[in-house]
Amino acid sequence: MIQKEFKMELKTKVIAEDGKQELTIEREFDLPVALVYQAHTEPELIEQWMGNKVLQFEKRNHGSYLFETKSPEGVVLFRANGVLLNLVENQSFVRTFEMENTGFAIQLEFFSFESISKEKSKLKMHIIYQSVVQRDQILKMPFAQGINMAHNRLETIAKQSME
Image (cartoon, rainbow, N blue to C red):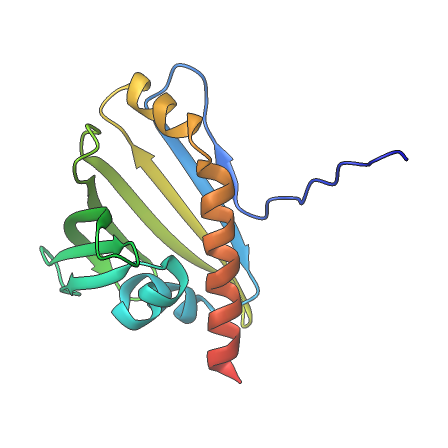
């Protein structure tokens, strides 16, 4: 029996140039731009598609946030925190992002949301890391697959909310 390997195309594109301490993530959604923006700035939606508990989220300039994931036994598996900056409704925001207890330095993330049509939009994230080494360590993890799966959930959940 011959087995064929099928690779699912990743709708979320991760662009990382060699030797740079940054990367860009791009994704087109079959969703209005307002819904994609809300999915990144409304705690209830963030919890649904990211799978993290939102312990704090202040949707304002200089507002802070705190995300957490626990095991079924209550052990903290992941915590991230940061500050939101320059929020422009349905267009953009900037945030700092720190993964606690990982040894990774804080990263700076620029989010932009573009309306392509009434029912289609584009998300672009530009992330700057402290160093090329740190960026490359992140890329060694199943980063691209993870963000693609999360974005697929975002699209599914947001479409359900439209029905």
